[in-house]
Image (cartoon, helix red, strand yellow):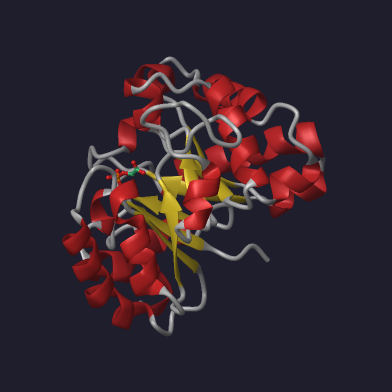
Length: 253
Ligand code: PGA
């Protein structure tokens, strides 16, 4: 049984006071929601304050990015895995398509970031997904297969079991165009088969694969009814407490 995970990615939204207000409004809605892990990924600047406010609750936090270098050093503007852990983070999003598209993230840097994050005791949420041109050309399995192969290169079975994967088709992110549950499930199945090839069937059955891309209160139930879908990485609809709470509490409708 794979425990579901519902994670909110706030991207470059919310000041510290807005993040705190969200926490105050959101917590009562999910105080009894133990069916899934609940994760919020605010900007770096809000992490410490938000974690202080969430202490003792069932809500954990994630960094939205991490430096690919181990340890510390002269790397202006970067934040290390140890620093994320130090402010109370449990997870870190790695290889989001916006980072790949605008900030030069590659499968090689994704691979290094996974390794430093695991070494620091963080749970990586590793994003993969094809863009529209690749989907229209029928190349989605080729793209995602290579992101998995290269991004997870030289990871052990134990490493894999500590990772979450988020399948996020780029054409569905922020566009209102969600992948149908069937499309998402078939890509999750493909990712699982790729994992089975590299690390064996038993490992592949245990890795949790989240879907991301225009997840909303209106479509979460049908997405989560797919056996292959183990949770969601939510952007826009995680910015508002009631909307994100409805997504977290998809099991109550
Ligand atoms: P969206 O973003 O839910 O706004 O489409 C998802 C993501 O980028 O993780």
